[in-house]
Image 1 (cartoon, rainbow, N blue to C red):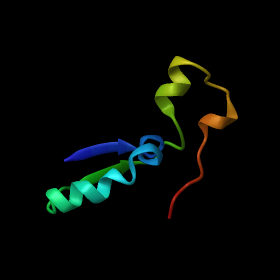
Image 2: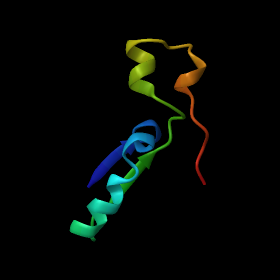
Image 3: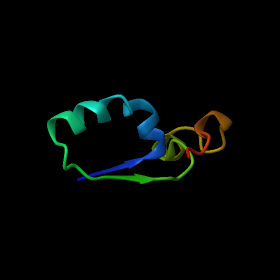
Image 4: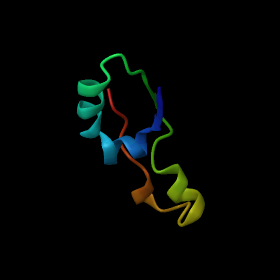
Length: 56
């Protein structure tokens, strides 16, 4: 089971292919929080580059 935010997904989306190849029954929960939340908290909470577009 994997819980991942949408910002992290931007960095690791290609690895999901490997995950499903090795563990086809894996379950992924995508938490849409509209950006890089950890980076906002640590570094620059009001920077517009921390925002990402919503996925379908």
